[in-house]
Length: 219
Image 1 (cartoon, one colour):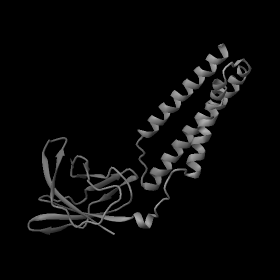
Image 2: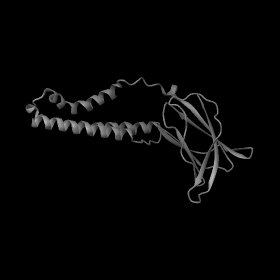
Image 3: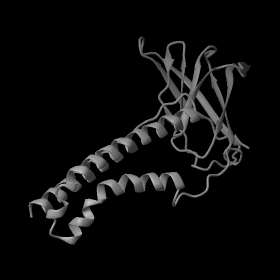
Image 4: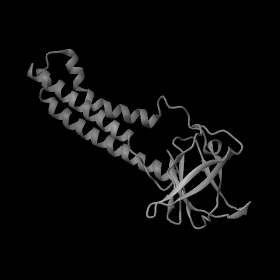
């Protein structure tokens, strides 16, 4: 009976640790310099975590082996193999991409997201920051032109099958809040949207600046 309790307790604790690590991994924000760096950071974190789980599983299996002969229930004998089986199963599913649809080529995923930004004040030298679930980029605001008394700028970004697309702008001490874009996971070609207002604020003086933006998606 004691052997049964030890095996059951150790397996329950192991499963709890696995679930906690999975939840923590799912909530991690990987901030690589680009999509490739973001993917590499995520992959390394995943395999480091899996390595830790496998190490714990090996230790538990060795310790529990001393109590294996004392197990009186068949189903508890099956539980004995759970800690070592789970990380190996996760590794196999990940390596062979079981249940994962074939990856669509980057060329097919790629679309161009073009922003137009206009404001009554010059943003020259400012920074346009774009982020998504696959990483992010920062670029200097250029291509300044004047139309109807307003400064107009253009910014282009490559987008792929991804979530959480958002952007913000910094210029001359002003910074806008992050603005989330209502673009589906699989982007579709759309003409320029209507102009939207995005206000920036200077954290030192609390002054504000009004910007307007619109965007289109092309292939």
